[in-house]
Image 1 (cartoon, one colour):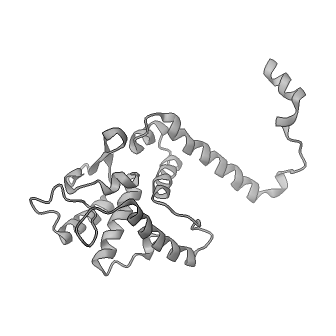
Image 2 (spheres, rainbow, N blue to C red; image 1 turned 120 degrees about the horizontal axis):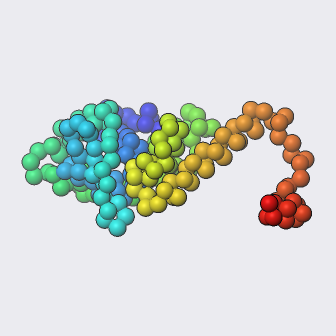
Image 3 (cartoon, helix red, strand yellow; image 1 turned 135 degrees about the vertical axis):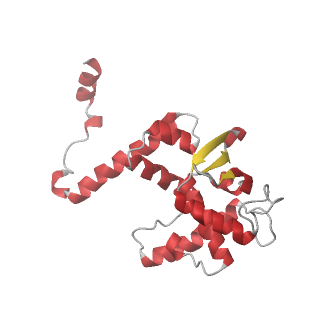
Length: 204
């Protein structure tokens, strides 16, 4: 999706910085559009302060490549100048804050372009939350523990984060079934409907 962005225009460069940050930080779309330059820490360790649900703030670490994009973007837009600290980080043609439908529209445009090149890779519906979900899944697949992903995403409970762990297990199961269909016998009975078996399991 990011490869579809034409970075020869100021709007394209804004969109690349915005969508890259959306993925890299794992923020909700409202958290993203509420960001201002003062939220960004440009010295190492790079990070962004995100205001989540209930006005709770969390510190999210950022990678060096996204910081280069943000530095260039702020230089180009003049948001690095004094007095711009609380200006919307990503803004529309009138200088106002972008809306959730606006960000969704931008994502849809590039997702449609990417789907044309690779229809099997890009789902029919791509929302801002897909970027957050993808980041969480990639962190999990990289070996990051769910408790750290919980803090990264701003979840109140680790049980919410465990949804990603369950989803990952399900993806692996489906991948094995697709790779070795001969191992999957569709004629096997459904054990969940075997009352005798269920009664025995409840007693042991």
